[in-house]
Image (cartoon, rainbow over all chains, first blue to last red; front, top):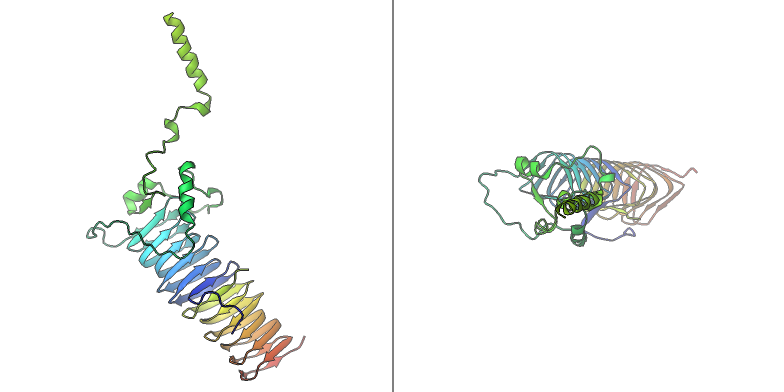
Length: 214
Length: 104
């Protein structure tokens, strides 16, 4: 009969908490603090933006918005969100790595040869507030390549080039709005070089030609 | 302040430290070090040495407690181990076996 009764079915590791050791259970786990050791759950692990997990992780689902160092085995899905950073191997039938996430390691989705091509399922394990949706939409106008939080990204975590990632490790790299926005975004070098002070040169040249014709 | 909850199906074997309140509904074995309050609820079970500011026990605790403020053993609390704290409250109905030290 303690004073707090918030949410009966969820475990929360608060921001200032450090757990060193083994953690196992049969309910959702939200990590806002830090866990070192191992995590074994029959449910979903949510690593919040402030969360740090340095552990062998065996779960059903994992949603990573913070930092994970260690291998993740999931019986269902692993999702690295825009803010997620991870070093380690992922072993799960479904792996989702969103644009902006940092990841280094191997991905194993099982027997790729015998896998039927599946349409992306719409329902995903989602526990927290649906904040990412509006955020990704607004990013369409932002510069496409820059990682959103590169300044505080862990120095050891590097985003692999998207092409290499798809080719070698069969990672599904999902553009924020399903790829529909990619044709609209022109790479910077295709645009007329207004910003580089070159247009003046171009005008001069043209005027020179005109003079010759006269 | 966001507080930490260890749900009823969770088992932690190791060490927990931090400076926010910790609510235990599951099982913790090892060591707990907090600069805040520990609540062991009815379903909670702690087998650990505990060092905190406050402890409130409605579940079961095995281990020694050293608290800088207060230890409260509620009526459905069960505890085995030594308690060292300036204020110690044991409610009617609580089960306790161990040594009590209220030296300030």
